[in-house]
Length: 102
Image 1 (cartoon, helix red, strand yellow):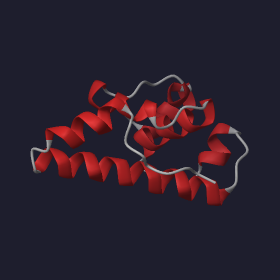
Image 2: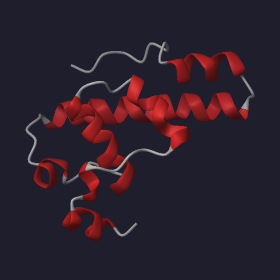
Image 3: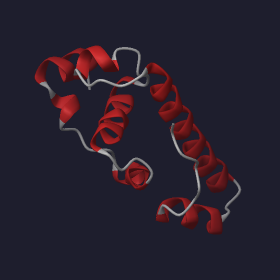
């Protein structure tokens, strides 16, 4: 998907994560957090998140969301590589403690 076209058409606001990434919704529960997930999925960063979405949040909070997202994805990737089914099940069930965003 072309990122500029996704922004112009407004698709970044309605896009759904792929099936294999939907477990992340269990860790990002509020509307703004889920919008962050969608935006990060399309663009791969949050550099213009505030400008593109018009949502207000602090940059420090966005750093925290990105850190949490990368940590969960890295844990999931590592568990798959090590074939650790217990950790994969824990992550995909949403019961893994990833810490709170302040």
